[in-house]
Amino acid sequence: MSAARWTPTALLLVLLLTAGCGSGSDVSMGTVTGTVFVDGQPAPAGLQIEFDPTTKGVRGSTAVTNDSGQYEAEYSLSTKGVRLGTCVVKLVQPNVAPSAPGQKPKLPFPNEYYEEIRQVDISAGHNTVDLEISKKNR
Image 1 (cartoon, helix red, strand yellow):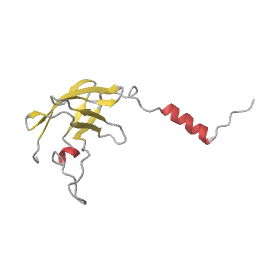
Image 2: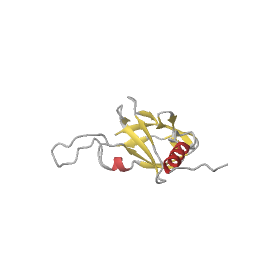
Image 3: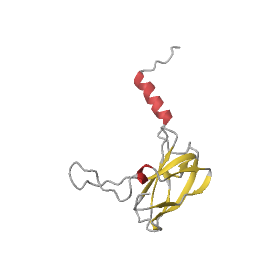
Image 4: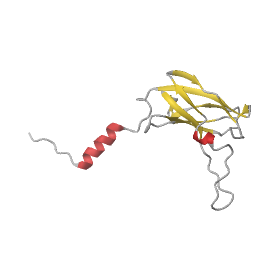
C-alpha cells in the first residue's frame, strides 16, 4: 500500500475546513442586554455599539438600539451574546461625509465614545450593561 500524498492546495483546504468560520458554538458566551441613555434620555433607534474583547485577535459582538434605547448584543447572525471576559464597549462610528474636502466628518457624539465608553467584564449567563453617554465632552 502506498501512502497518500498531500498537495499544498489539498492541505490548505483541509485546514480551512477544520478551522470553520467560527459560528460561535465553540465560544464561551454570555448574553448581554441593556439600555443606552443620551443625556438621561433613551438613545434613538439605530445607535450601534461594539463589545471589543481586550484579548487581541478575538472577534467582538455588536448591538443596535431600538426606539426605547434598548439593545441585545449579537456575536453573529445566528448567535446572541458576547465572549466571556473583559470588553471595551464603544460606539460604532457612523458613515458620515465631511462638510468640506480635507476635513474630518462631524460625528454625533464626542470622539472618546467611539474609542471607549467603559470596560465591562462579561460572565456566563445573563449580563445587563446600561450605558450613559452625552452629546457633550466628558
